[in-house]
Length: 308
Image 1 (cartoon, one colour):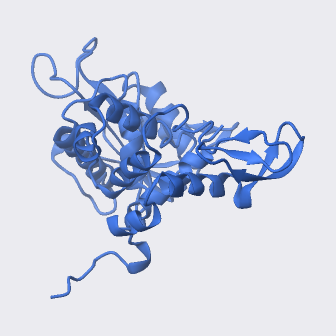
Image 2 (cartoon, rainbow, N blue to C red):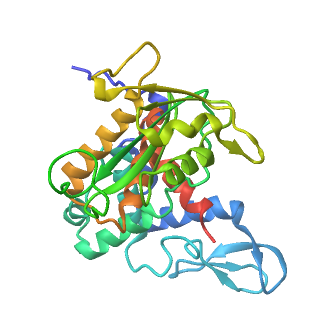
């Protein structure tokens, strides 16, 4: 019986496709070379001009055809100075891009045979290139909500009390039908909430939030010396009202559910120091959720884009 595929054929990238495209370290290195220096044409610092480079036997490097000065496609990337096989790096990125809720370093250790310390460092390096700090959500409608991660609130449930350091505040901004931004912030107050909104939401957008008082200044915000002209609507969750016509925050709350279930089920616990990198991982996948299995290729593109 033929199994029906829910992912369109042009968006599929299965493990078989990965093995065919990257069978060994040589093919991975050649991919990096072509992405960074198409056709082997790269700037030679010794010659002072673009020169054709050829592969050096026995080394992960390419040499100038004229003066033999060597360059490496891995220089300036997350692979630089790593003794781990390049294909293992690619496989880790493939798994990270192919899962919905993430994959643990322990699983990579089991599947590839590297140590847990190596697997953890690989994922830390991969997450470091997934951030979109300057992303602008173009609207026209966005939802904003805050949440908390980690620990238990002192003396009961609800929002953390002042001075409670066990929970980390996070703000999420979701464009309906589009992308999302999630940022760990020092505190849930007007400067942090409204400052993040100004940075990531295009002026003139319609913004939906809950009744939290810190959001009440949204309609008076300015951006680049001009009024941002945001239209602001609030839904009163404390009255057990969650949808009123087009006014709701269900999109961003659905993203919170994905993040919290993913971190709790896969990673179990994340320290405050690295929480933002995990948020970057989840937003990177969520923002490319319509690309099928092509998220692995998006990660590879990001590696080359962030190469120094």
